Image (cartoon, rainbow, N blue to C red; front, side, top):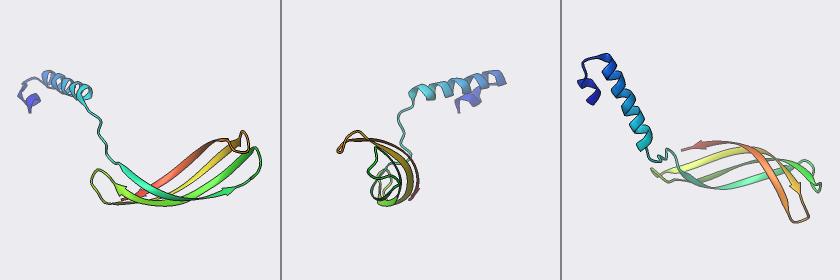
Length: 102
């Protein structure tokens, strides 16, 4: 309501800018969505036993939304690549797409 007290439009615009700047510097972390799920994944390896092992991963999960409560279900798919440094150690990277249903 404070900006409505000004008579000139330039004062009004300036007060709006000041309000936006103040909001930017005083904002706190705001979580919009926060959930935890337990997932089950299925891996399909294209080159098992090799040093470079590309794979496809699909799966789903269920859990709980933590801010407002309620059940969460999730479906996902991913494409990844493993590099086996040794028989017991590997490094991997993957790209995942996930749909979450609340």
